Structure formats: C-alpha cells, structure tokens
Length: 239
Image 1 (cartoon, rainbow, N blue to C red):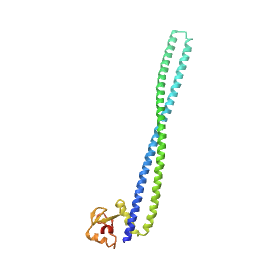
Image 2: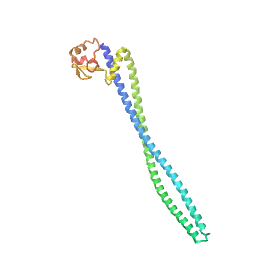
Image 3: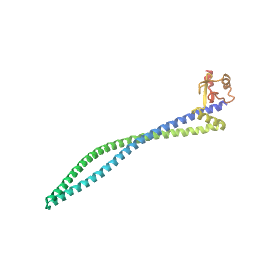
Image 4: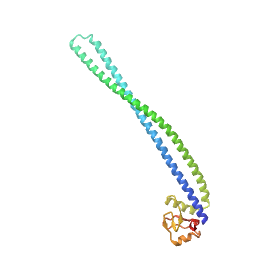
C-alpha cells in the first residue's frame, strides 16, 4: 500500500505540473489574442478612414462636376447676353448669371472645406499606418515568442503525459478513478499530507485512531473532512 501511495503522490505531482503548464498556455493564448485584437482594431480603424477618404473623394468629384457645370452655364449665359435685344431679357439672364456665380462660390467654399478635411484625414491615415506598421512588427515578434513558449510547454505536457501513463499502469483502475474524481472535486489535489495529526489538505485534526492507523500502511485512508487520500510522511512525523 505504501508503494501505491508513493505512486499516487508522484502522479499528483505530474498532474499538478500539467495543470500549471496548461494554465500558462492559456494565459499566453489570451495574451496572443489580445495582441492580435489590438492590431485588428487598428486595421479596422484604418479601413474606416480609407472608406471615409473614398467617400470624400467621391464627394469632391461630384462637386467638381457641379462646379464645372455652373461655370459652363455662366460662360454660355455671358455669350448669349451679347445677342440679347431687350432689356427684360438682359435682366433675366443677368439674374441667372448672378445665381450661377453664387452657386459657384458656394461650391468652391464646400470644396475648400472638403480639401481641408481630406488633408487632415490623410495626415491621420499616415499616422495610423505608421502606428499599425510598428504595432504589427512588435505584435508579430511577441506572438512568435509566446507561441514558442506554448509549444515548449506542450512538449513538457506531452512528456509528463507519457510518464503519467506509465504510472497509471501500476495502479488499479478503481484507484485511478477515485483519484481522478477527488482531483476534480478538490481543485487538483487528491492527496493530502498528514502532519502532527492534521490533514494539510483541509487543516482539520484527524481522529486519533485514524492517525495511528496511517503508520500501518495496511490500507488506504481518507480524510473524514475533505475525503482526500491521506499520505503520511513518516520521516517527518518521526523527526
């Protein structure tokens, strides 16, 4: 029975090591996700800016077409005025020209504001592209480093799992099943060391008879409080 307890203790050490490596892997994976999320958000922001720029370019093109049309109207009206015979027609055409010139002025003002906005947006996009390039470079290096660590941890896990399989073969199926159940129920700790008559798993005192029985190693004993498998470090107790 003592040998089985020793195997179980070794098994628990391996399982806790695997748990630790898996936790570290999960943390690294979360870090990678966060790094990639930052880059993705920056790419999305840049894409939105590029879309805005495309809309502004379209608006500018439409305004330039409208400006050209109004300027052409003015040119034609001014040409037509030379052939006008009556004062009434002359005044009507004059009003058309004045209205067209007002429209040209408004369009030119809109174009000026639009070009200013486009210049500002271009500056923002240039800055964003620089920040994105820097972030992508930094993120790529960090992701590669973290991915390498994840792979190293996986190698350690695979090695531990191979050792675990060998240990499990030396234990009965029922015992391994009970051990696994306790691990799930007790946050990964199925075995608890006994010291000075107390279970270190729950820090509760053991009944004196149970404590004395542990020295016999005649069977497996469980803590009546936390149900963990009790493991006596006899050398420590005797010291």
